[in-house]
Length: 156
Image (cartoon, rainbow, N blue to C red; front, side):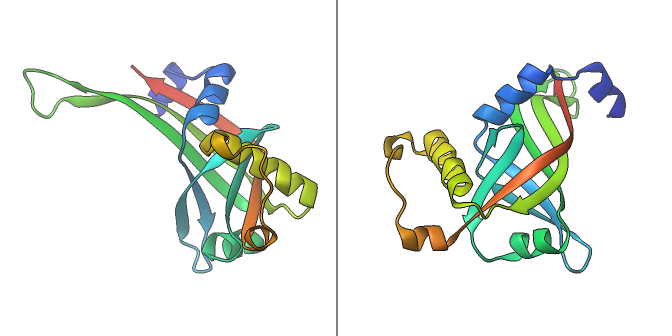
């Protein structure tokens, strides 16, 4: 597996495209018991950071406040590759990105709004430009992941 990653790296442009277009990423934090905690999330890639929104309370926020080091993964399954003669010889055509970084909970109201605007533009463009109800903002947390390492790979 390691050799394939080195043999099939995604370019920085391909990595950015995957991060811009895929709808679901997975955020990995470390739980209080030391076990990984992985959460599927909606996200945007902006300013070289992964930005996520969610409820203002919960395990991923507790984990980030305790230990800000996180992992983030996004992938795109393009197709399954079957060998017509061998039933167990199946492979996957895919692209994937793995990020390591440091997560913070965003507090600055203008930054929170900017990130939420980008999330709305990606997932619900019909609502772009609308204002957010204050009670919804109180229930929402925004997380920014500053990328410390990023690798992308593909198999075709």
